[in-house]
Image (cartoon, rainbow, N blue to C red; front, side):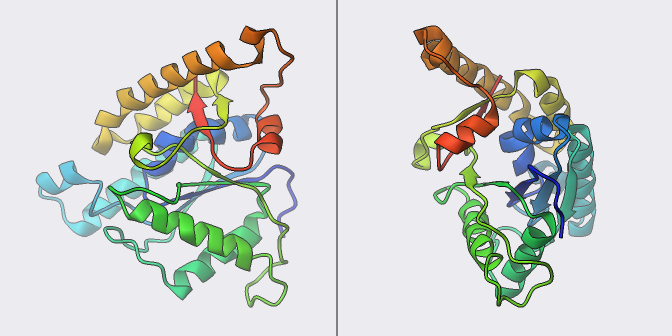
Length: 244
């Protein structure tokens, strides 16, 4: 069983989701010498590769393209990446798929897990991934569950910010300062030209979250503060956003 302290596991529905929504957290973990692993349940080949389809590429060509892009992005962040190729649009939960996720939990032994929120009316694959991530987390703790490795403790799970938070019942409670690694996040985003429209969107979102933190956090109010991610994760049980 892996014993490195502070391992981070990111469960991503599609090959690009972890880049937009969690790349800063991943880069911070890697910068601190922590293990960071991304688990992509699908390549996003059907629902999130419109330009490649318009270019006349085949399904297998699109999968290969999305895999290469995601591998390049993970490398830019200093993360490991694994693909389960479970098929998107729709992503369906199966016992076999949950079992494979359990195996990853036990292999990584994460101290923190990041995944999608449980509501997204525009993309059912995202909450499906979240439900499987949460179920696998519970099963990985069961001493009698028939999977390799040792049973886990209960790592905290954080939901990363969806593309349209106001439509997904998402209110960020934790803002993670990724200023020191934002350029790495930007480089990772630029590894995904199939979704180039997202580059500036998430750069602008990071700036807005940064303004919110500067306005509302301890330093601006004259309060003592601790901006380390670990401190936030001790204090808040649920969700996170990224900022610069």
